[in-house]
Length: 150
Image (cartoon, rainbow, N blue to C red; front, side, top):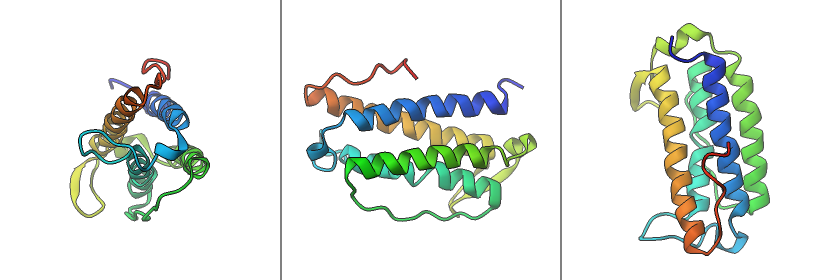
């Protein structure tokens, strides 16, 4: 084994703490309006992340693959959803037996792969979109949180 289940969760939660700080740093009036180069606004990206992380884990644990549609929300509501999902992620993670990492699943009826690959996708997707948010903050003249402080 390269990394334990507990260490993997800790790694993901570190990314979630950092992404939360990027959401916090974003100006309320720019969250769903500002973008660069035709990319989606960061608020939309944050909603996508909320729609992937916990729904992915719920599917892995229960084989129920549903995603709730989320609409624009004030930053305080976005942070509330983020925090609730962070707690739910930990709760679901504790229900997953370690041998499940090697099992095959098809996420949301369309993406087949081993469970560890699906989890890494969710983490990679978060890092990617947080990077976009970091670029947006810099374009707005705001110093983003340091990427290495998780």
